[in-house]
Image (cartoon, rainbow, N blue to C red):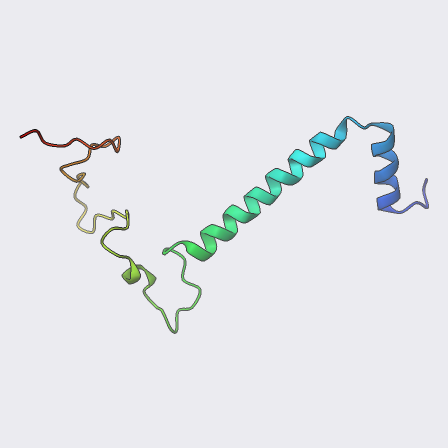
Amino acid sequence: MAGASLGARFYQRIKRHPGIIPMIGFICLGMGSAALYLLRLALRSPDVCWDRKNNPEPWNRLSPNDQYKVPLDGSRVTPHPLTSWSGDPQLPYH
């Protein structure tokens, strides 16, 4: 077994202990999900700027409907009058 390659040793271990197959699958699924999430954050987030030369201020591309609230003067951010902090709409009664 000392001269066996890594893949051969891995296959022999799985043959002896088939119960680790689901564990390996879940670990691979978790690592793949984490990698895809980090890739999404790196490519889609307006906070990340990959091209400073052509787009030095990516946050200026945000539309008024985007939900980024940044208090510039240090004041407290207040919610929109028609929504609560929990996100449930509170429609005014007539």
